[in-house]
Image (cartoon, rainbow, N blue to C red; front, side, top):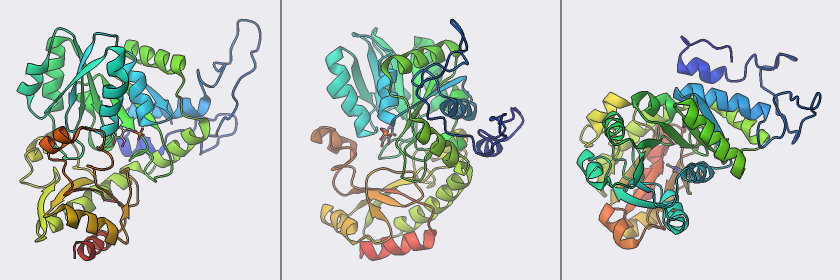
Length: 383
Ligand SMILES: Cc1ncc(COP(=O)(O)O)c(C=O)c1O
């Protein structure tokens, strides 16, 4: 990518890797599968020694991602969970985290069933309410991790306000930006310290790649994350780095379509007799609508909706033809899931029900098929 700070995000996305392979001039940056590299002489390096520590294809991807998020350094991992796990290793026994309660179940699981045993504790709070966060801060609190919009109920947290709170209490501020991507939301510019992605979702965008990303706002933290990545080793292989670079080139176009279609589908669902609630920040009656308008460039491609019985929710999943009943989100293909029994199954039932993640709640990742076809499928499935 020819560095030009005046270029738009859309242009930077397309240009990732272009002009970087000076020897051949390749437009599509090559895959370097080599696990190791010859040293020119004792004590010298080409800049690459061993692929866990550094790989040319991964480097192009990481530099591209850091620039897109407005950070100084990105590290790319074998999955979103590998990225989060590596980030949690930054903390020590006795440290405490404040985490969004409307959160991907796997993040809850790794904190609750892996890191709790190592002495890292977490409180789950409604991070759409600043006072709830403030109340949860203890002497041991080291960081706040939010997902905004939340998962699966799409609650919207005020990134700039939470950043202020973190500065006041000297806490690290981590934002999982998986649902919106840097095309729609740039948390580092609003004061976050680290951005996390499951790149398996929109960044990859085609349901054919599993990967994760951490982006740091300052060099010291970037160096620490790189240290942890190299020390523990969950790097993304070069072939997948290339696939992710290829996918990123169409991210802006894809996000535009996701946003447009999701708005149409959400409004259609709101009018359906058997749908009792629709959760999408793009709807004027969503409690986070105005905040979203201020802090994002679009409302994204995810929505959840409640139908009038758990039986109907199960029947819808069985009747779907175009939309696939499958976990995950953010790909070009539309996917629907039942969070209570899939993505959020590891959250204790009482807690799930308190949050409203019951068996009548369906989550839809609206793909880039025509909105009319998606709506037609929902219409026949809702019967
Ligand atoms: C918001 C969010 N963060 C992190 C993850 C974990 O990512 P991965 O599945 O790539 O490990 C997911 C997965 O669904 C997610 O939805």
